[in-house]
Amino acid sequence: MPVIEVDHLQKRYGEKVAVDDVSFTVEQGEVFGVLGPNGAGKTTTVECVQGLRRPDGGSVRVFGLDPVRDRTEVRQRVGAQLQESQLPDKVRVREALDLYRSFYRNRADIDELLTDLGLAEQRNTYFQKLSGGQKQRLSVALALVGRPEVAILDELTTGLDPQGRRDTWDLVERIRDRGVTVVLVTHFMEEAQRLCDRIAIIDQGRMVAIDSPAGLLARVGSEHRVHFRPAEPVEDALLLAAPDVTGVSRYGAEVTVTGTKDVLQSVLAVLNGRGTTYTDLRVEQPTLDDAFVALTGRGGRAAAQSPTDGRSS
Ligand SMILES: Nc1ncnc2c1ncn2[C@@H]1O[C@H](COP(=O)(O)OP(=O)(O)OP(=O)(O)O)[C@@H](O)[C@H]1O
Image (cartoon, rainbow, N blue to C red; front, side, top):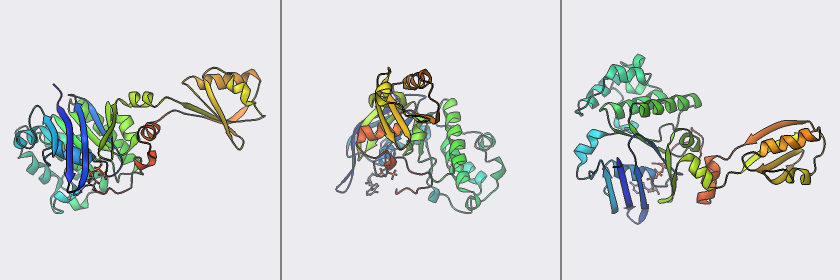
């Protein structure tokens, strides 16, 4: 049985339809991504899963339970990150963990958790003195302190620097390795592609696609691009005649050849065959950005903001 079942979920705020007919299931042990731009309805969806919001239509089941009606039981088994504003400035890291741990019947070893999350040295630090990354890690620690079977991590890396993001990704992998099912809410394509077994793409409250990262890429066609600057002119016809090549375009001295997976070998065979040297050779593979654009008809940048951008909810 799936751990989470969301079936034709609808949620409105007044006139505003935030979630419109969203359905998906999350299997035990997977990292499941909920991906979409700001305001897509991601947070509302996972708040319904946590029992924090009552659906206006459809149903949500977590371990077969109704998260609103059976909230006490579901909260014991689902760990969610706290919003920063929910902790007082003058609480120390260890005190916060002790307090939250007391709410659960299955209790994690706090020293182990602090070490795992790289917070051992901050155990006696006041919350207000923590860096952004440390606060983020503490919120993850608080999500894990009740040894949950499912961890819901929402906008985990927003506001972190590149190293902080990478450390947090390693952390998600370690959480998964412990057997915890992870629901990862994000608007970063790279994060979803790197971490998730399956991804639901939500846009304007609606489910656009659900698949593995590779499956999403395959759906939108996998056009690879090879860019290079030849030392002497190369005729388009020669490149177009090579296997796997579907198109040639030029920008100044740079030639871009598009094609299927083996297009690089074809281009190199043409260039080497006529003894043409080249510089600045690079290959672009399709990314989830391309898939997002193709599936939603919107710019991928809408969903792939810089890590320092704020969030609106
Ligand atoms: N409490 C609320 N009252 C009214 N409207 C809300 C409320 N919470 C969210 N909304 C609106 O519902 C829509 C979905 O919001 P939600 O926070 O679920 O999206 P999101 O995909 O998580 O976005 P973000 O990435 O910005 O967090 C948005 O248009 C948002 O403005």
